[in-house]
Image 1 (cartoon, one colour):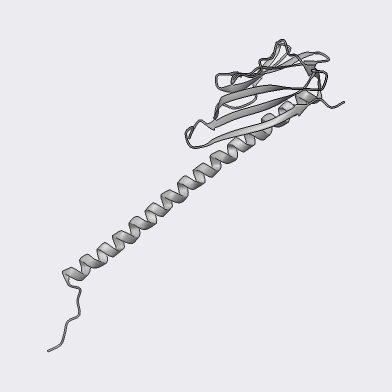
Image 2: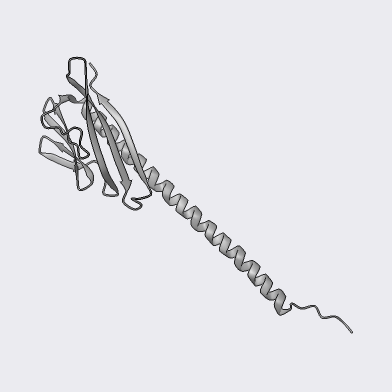
Length: 163
């Protein structure tokens, strides 16, 4: 009598169980990698927004004469930075959780997009030995609107008038 080779029900169940385990592990790995890519992408977008804001503010400082301390708000999480220029003023403030740029009251636009939430725009005066304000130290907390509790950056920098 010839032996017939066939899968028994027990072997089939074992193979299906092994396949299901491997499939679940692969799917879990996929979701973990996708989440990591999403976090990295959001961090990258925040870094781009910070670089753009930093370059914008540097450009404003380069074209400004001094800091308008009367119209600026320092030591407050919702700071206002007003700079005197040869043709008037420029001002940075927080509005609708975004950085708003105002030039002479005639041109106003957001420097940051609504993809981000500005939770802190803290400004401190930098004074010289004669107590004249020669610059500003800025602390900025910015979060992703998509993942606000997960992707948050704190950026600290200084802008100083050079003679």
